[in-house]
Length: 192
Image 1 (spheres, rainbow, N blue to C red):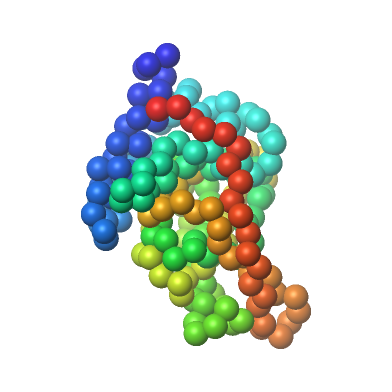
Image 2: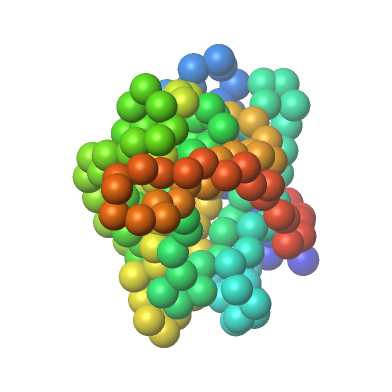
């Protein structure tokens, strides 16, 4: 049992070690995590495979959390074709890395108000790829599992507890967006 969870412990330790400062070097964290995701993909598939088989919709699994400095580490399961609404991260910094599958991440600039969002680009992430964002209130994004058949898994590291955030809806062609508060739901906890 201990060996099975060593990969979970390794990912947690990298996230904690590289976020032990007020403004972590997210590029370095991305490189370290990507190296492990590439090098230990078989172990990850064995350990996290059951999350891909669950078929219970979009789920967030808590891997670890720390209060000082605040950090949370999660694994997300993305059903085939699932897309999030455009959303922010409550002003937290964050890093997302693909464990299995492929995601499209479309980034938005919120500008001066929450009422106008402008798409500023797309990033595609395959296994081991990572993207990150600094702590700011001016960014939002939408993520989508590119597969029509397979569940994707991603690793997320945030500079705190992402319990609440804003999701954005565009009710019509006016370009006007409506921000709605949302709460994150945790499906369970993965033991390190």
